[in-house]
Length: 271
Image (cartoon, rainbow, N blue to C red; front, side, top):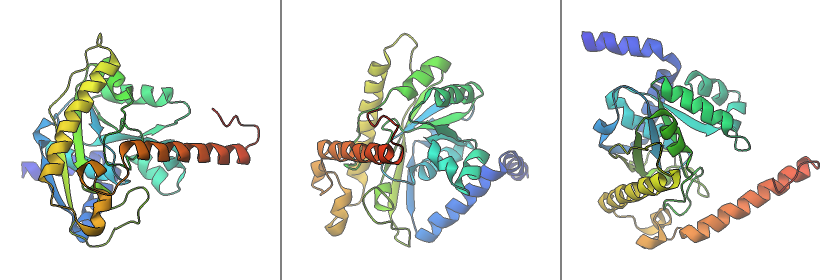
């Protein structure tokens, strides 16, 4: 009875977020996705924390949030501001109290994230900032580290694997029934002392996440045939190498800048 009452109270406090989660879980069940979550006990049951994840697919935020469910926590994800421009997604993002990030001016997003952390929220960050087409860890930005240092909260790493097989950059969506395995591995908390250089803490975090990723890849069912495109070249797959993927990202950025400059001739395309 107490558990039921608690569930009702939690739903009433976050009606939008919990409704979206219910719909998402129904979709995942219809797709036959087989989740394997390990280390969920590392998600704190109370208080703020920066949740840091690798980025393989467009759905990573939805999958990663499942790792916090056993702790009855919700993650406020930092997402690009343009999502709020969508007539349906925008109101939902606001209702779930996610944090918009303007890539041209991230200072407001940083302040909003710090405020949420001080209020005891879990804030989700993708330090690679974009999907990794190589399925390797890209270079990490230090924003997540600086947030943790500014608030004294721990950093909790979550490593995803298999999500790239559902919907990732450069490949068709596979949203039908597939029984795709997806692993979510939650690592132990990493501290970010205020006096420590952010890049050093970031390097420690990345190294820990690489170990978790290596283990997840080793434990994952063998990929063959057409699915080799979702496997890093280092592991015998046909995905681009990290260097090749970085070059593809660079060319994409140049194309976006050129398109923006053409649309707004007064804009400095090199900005």
